[in-house]
Image (cartoon, rainbow, N blue to C red):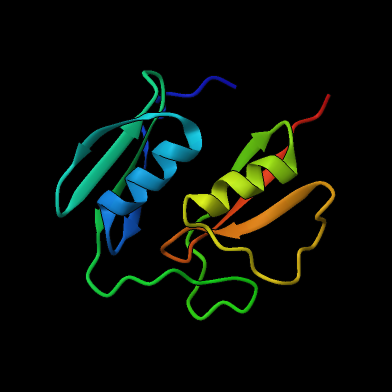
Length: 122
């Protein structure tokens, strides 16, 4: 199927866009392209992620979600244990109740938004 559009970027809600951008830039090794009080963006030259300030925004948490989950990001990694430790060092937290810890790990970013570290298939 041929589409009529191309993805420009993914924009997400945040209480602190700059903090989200710094965290995910460190996770991905991307550059922070823009950051001010209301909006921040990171990119690698081909793909961009952005966060816009939403007053009162709070991440849903996981597994007991206090608010509806709006999105979650999945990242491929070669070593789950090493990637998990690196994310925790950057400020992520690890909730209890991991569904398949041998294949992926659910972590919460500093704003409480879940994301997954997924073992890259050989």
